[in-house]
Structure formats: C-alpha cells, structure tokens
Length: 143
Image 1 (cartoon, rainbow, N blue to C red):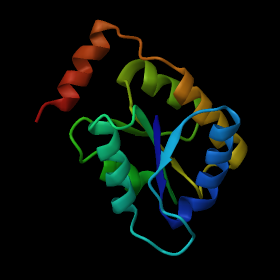
Image 2 (cartoon, rainbow, N blue to C red):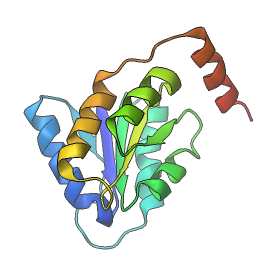
Image 3 (cartoon, rainbow, N blue to C red):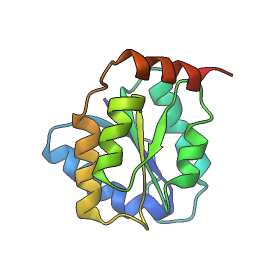
C-alpha cells in the first residue's frame, strides 16, 4: 500500500496523482489534507512518514508547494528516506541508489504530466541492492 499526503498547496496535484493511482489499480491511503484550506505541511509529512516507517505502507508520496518543507518534516522520522524529485532521472536514481521510500514533489513546481511520470518512475524502479549503496544508506541512518 502507498501512503499519500499533502498540504493545501499540493492538494490539486495530489488529486491528479490519486486519479492516476486508481487508473493503475494501485492501493493507497490518503492521509490528507482534504481541501485547499491552509494547513501546516509538517503534520502531513509526519503522518505519511510514520505510516511508511512503521510498515503500515510500503512507500509514500508527499506534495507541498515546493516539496521542500514536507520532505524535511518526513525525514525527521527514523527510517524515512524522503527524496524531493522534479525530474524522472532523480526519481530513478534515488530508488536505485538511496532506496528512497517517500517521493516528495512541489505542486507549484512540477506540472501534472511530469509529476505522473515521476510517480511512475519512482514506483517502478527497484533498489539496486549494491553493497556500496547499502553501506551509504547505513551511514545516512547513523546518528
């Protein structure tokens, strides 16, 4: 299952991504927000982050205006590797090399067409499992 969440600036793009997921038969859990009324992005970054870190969901998608703040909030949670991506190359690389488990995007940065391609790339790319990448991930996780 995929966790998805956003703030008010990411709401419109989140709706497009949900439609895309439904068309592809991908199960998801929507952690909010549920309108364009102003909310605080850390709330939703942490909800999705905990869902992924706790194993309730395998991966996550987060959207705020830039993707920066919401990814920073999610990355405070142990076990979360949220990656801000605005292109398909970065989405592929972060899965291959970093085993990122949350994709973050900016609703005010990335258009719908590109965002859907980024989502597909992120979801369809497996972690390489290369020892050098595993060692680097361990270093990221160390305090």
